[in-house]
Every structure is written in structure tokens, then in C-alpha cells.
Amino acid sequence: MIKFLAIIVVFVGSFNVMAQDPAAQPGLISRFRPGVMWFFTGYRPATAEKVRKYDRLIFDLTYNDWAGDRQPFNNKWNSIGFNTSLFFDFPLTKGNTISLGLGICHSLYRISYSYKQFQVDPVNDMTQLNDIQTFVPDLDKHFFCGNSLSIPVELRFRSPNWQHFKLHIGGKVGYTLNNYTKDVFDSSNGKIIVKNSQFPDVHRLLYSAHARIGFRNFALFGSYQFSPVFSNSASTRLNILQMGVSISLF
Image 1 (cartoon, rainbow, N blue to C red):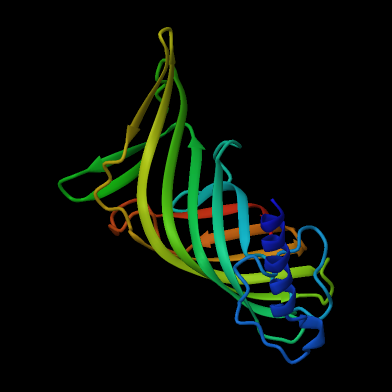
Image 2: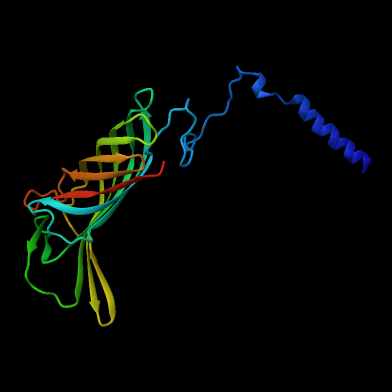
């Protein structure tokens, strides 16, 4: 037992001898580099000498609509979508009052409509959105939905303090993963959901412009997609609109 304690004492003592005090070596440069969460300090600001990076994970909760050949704001209130964006923030000024945001975004939009019907012509590869007055029994909800992945780029302006006013102006280029209709029937046997993704002229390449304006973690958000939903010039032209709020976590 005495020998064991002696070994422990020698072992600990050797660490004390070999250890170096970083405070006594101001010129010491660490070989370690900060990770992705280096500038994340919770709800309080970091120390004054560090440049903070903001708005790197952003969630947009949006109302969705369409423009083009159909007038906007004629659809239902529950046309809700969701964007998730992961950004790198590149400061362009010393206090990071101007920066460049570059990242990746997943977008889901859903438009709730009534008295309209998508009619697909597979022979001519075209899609028409037509007005109808026919009441379909048990049909509870109509949705037109889409998913996409894109690369957003933003020019970001901020006031100097960490609880800052901000303005983001940007755009994104991406790829449409899918478009589909979703019909919900409320029958006596329960809810029945019917999906249709057979659109022959989905416009895969998307490009849009957006803006955010707000304070620190919260902002108003607006987006307009210049590329139409359908690629055929004979199809109904629909351009996606998104309006809502943005929440930035760090």
C-alpha cells in the first residue's frame, strides 16, 4: 500500500514539473483551433476583443402564396411553409457591421386553396391551374406543396451593438426536389389523404430574391421566386411568394 501511494505521489509530481503555465508565456501560440461553436456564447455577448458572428442558423416561418397568372392573397390562411438555413458569416468590416452570408437552405412551401384544380397534360408536358365551381363531397382540404434545396447569398447590414438592428438583402439559386398536390378527404371512415406528384414540367432550377429586417434574433422575412413552378410556357405561370418571420439561434 505504501509503495502504491509513493508511486501516485511521484506520478502527480512529475506532471507538476512538466506542466507549463500559459499565463507566464504570453507569446505562446496554441496549436488548437476553435471549432464551429467558437463564437457561440449563449444569450450574452462574447468578450469585447472577439468579432461576433451572427445569423448562422435561421428558421423562417412563412405564409405562402403564388403570383403570375393567378392573383396573390386569394388562398387560405393556413398556407404555411418553413425554411431552414445554415450560414457562414464573413465579416467585411472591423465590427462586423457589414458581412457576407453564404450557406445552404431547405425550403418547404404549402399553399392551401379551394375551387381550383391542377390538370396535367402528359402528352404536351404541360400543367394548367383551372378554376372550378364543382363541390367535391367529403373533400376537406386542397394543398399544393414543394421542397427545394438552395444556396443563399446575403449582404448583411447591422448596427454596432450585439442587440442590433439588421437588414439582409439576398438571393438564392437551387434545385426543386418535388412538387405535389395533397387532397384530404374527411369521410365517414376517417381521413383519407391522396397525393399526386406527376407533374411533367416541374421547373427544377429555381432562383429568387429575399430580404430580412429586424432586431438581433428576430426579423420580418419576404421572398419572391422569379423562376416559375412549371417550365412549359403553355402551362399556368406560378411564382412562389413567402412572407413571415425569421428566428436566428446563433
